[in-house]
Image 1 (cartoon, rainbow, N blue to C red):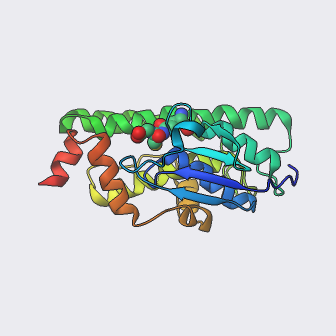
Image 2: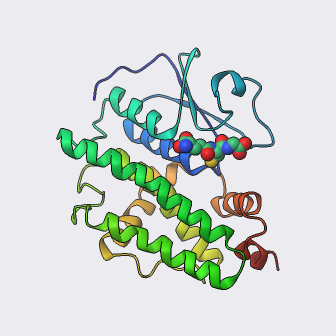
Length: 230
Ligand SMILES: N[C@@H](CCC(=O)N[C@@H](CS)C(=O)NCC(=O)O)C(=O)O
């Protein structure tokens, strides 16, 4: 934690991208000054190729000349320059937090398997596997306070918030996707994060519409999207 506010920070993002939302949450929480360049995959800014070597978002442009990509790496950079501490103090807990933050990518892959399942049976199986992934994480959570590590917001909250939002949105649009069997401590954390200003302020546009477009693009032929189109 320090206060090395760069002259400018610009976050390039798509509203539908969970990884970009992760970075946006950490930036909001840090109190650093930053701006956002919001666009869609159909409408990429011309300079994206120069600043994002893989053509992906999120990418953070610093002082209009250097850029960083990969949401986990950007989150670490934000935590380093943030005037507000976004990581546990203890080194071992901090390292563990990074490992469990990376685990959110595995959870997200399992969530995508739910969206891409081709029929109801496969979707329900994928739903169960996805929810089971949280049972492993549940043993790590401190069971008090609104955040993963209790009272302190840390970058692991930014890693799972976007996924929790997508789970709630999907359940509202398509109730056959359920998360009732989440461990209690994960479900409380999910509710706390989804009700937090940090998560709400990180949403760009009407999220139900954003999510439907994401579903159509990323899992258009999946059972869920097919049912929603009927
Ligand atoms: N591992 C990367 C994943 C980034 C990623 O997959 N970004 C997607 C959007 S969510 C993207 O930019 N895809 C390129 C495209 O859709 O054209 C991270 O965590 O930053």
